[in-house]
Length: 214
Ligand SMILES: Nc1nc2c(ncn2[C@@H]2O[C@H](COP(=O)(O)OP(=O)(O)O)[C@@H](O)[C@H]2O)c(=O)[nH]1
Ligand SMILES: [Mg+2]
Image 1 (cartoon, rainbow, N blue to C red):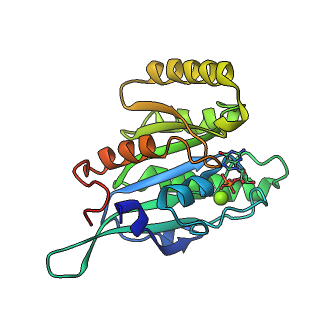
Image 2 (tube, rainbow, N blue to C red):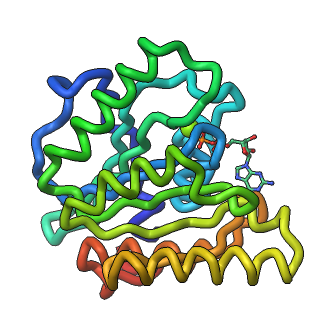
Image 3 (cartoon, rainbow, N blue to C red):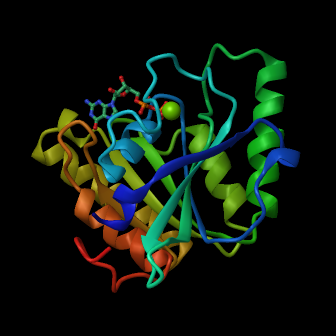
């Protein structure tokens, strides 16, 4: 079993007071509603329903934590890191009050989590860098946190389309600095999973963990 396959639901927080203690490195998944955050977590962890990929955009206003664990020498399991599914943003139909709750919750989370090692910004490869994505990216540019632009739904593009969007995202990443990386991904076709896994293992300093060693 790989580290990501050990993922188990830990808790949900609907307000900042409900966040768990900052014990382990955290990897957050952020992105517009429907970009494929939950699908990405399900594919990465090889658990079809872990993050409950939902077809109702913007319904969940919860921050969901999933713990990653590894066998220790005493026969128990050590808590290594958490994956964090953030509520989606940028849903057009949301009421003003809902948006305010969202930005207070996510903005607050991003501002205070010192154990946040990196954020996977999940975007639809057909329309990346929408205004709300840019809001998030701008907000994060003031923080020492790594970013990985995940261009999801690449299965919807032809080869030229993939090349174009990759080049655009690479240019955007380069503008920001060496802490920002980019890849194409398809949750549907499970393409790009190894690349994503390698980036995340590097973030939590666990490159030495390879499949089947836990
Ligand atoms: N074509 C395609 N559809 C996808 C892909 N990933 C997710 N979806 C679909 O996009 C919708 C939203 O996915 P979800 O994971 O719930 O998005 P979230 O709101 O960001 O958590 C669902 O209908 C998924 O089946 C992908 O790689 N390709
Ligand atoms: Mg979701």
